[in-house]
Image (cartoon, rainbow, N blue to C red):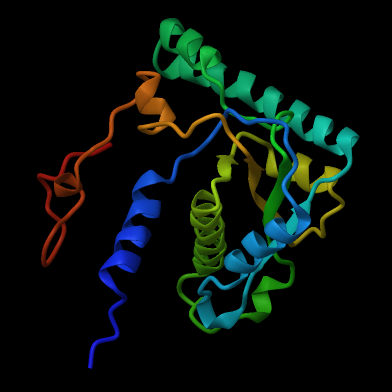
Length: 223
C-alpha cells in the first residue's frame, strides 16, 4: 500500500518549497480575514516538541503600533550596519544600508510570532534541548510561509529588532519572547532567486557542502 500523493500533488508541494521567497516588496492591498485565518490555521498545524504548541501570533492592526515596530527595526538596522562596518569594511556597511530589509509599512498584514510564557513546565523533548520550543515555532512559521506562497501571498521574516524592546512594546510577559516580525501581503512579483542573491549580497551554497555521513566531516566548508 502506498501513502504517496499523486504525481501532480507531489509536484505542487515541491514547487511551493522551491518558489518560496523571503519578500521585502509588497502592495498595500489588504488580505481577506478568511484567508488570513486559513494561513494561520496552516501555521497552527505545525509539529511541536511534546505537542506543547509554543507559538503565539500577535496581529498588528493598529497603525501606530506598526509604526513603532518599524522604528525599532530601523534602529537595529543602523546598529547592524555599524557592526558590519567594524567586522568587514565600510563599503560592505554601505552596501547593507542600500538593501531593503523589511516591508513593515507596506504589507497588508503584520504579525509577530512569539514563544509562549511558562515554557519551563514543558519537559517532554526539552530536558536536554530546551531550544526545541524555538524549533517548533520555526516549523509554524515555515508552514505559514509555504501556505502563503501557495495562495499567492508574499511573506518576509524580519529579525532585525531588540527582543526586549519589542516585547515591552507589545506588553508581553517576562518569560515570553518575540521570535519574528512577519510581513504578509500581495506582491507585484516573486523574486526568481532569493533577494540577497539577486542583490549580489550573498550566494547560495549547494547541498553537497551541507551533507555529511557517519560523523562530522572536517573538510566541510565553513560559512
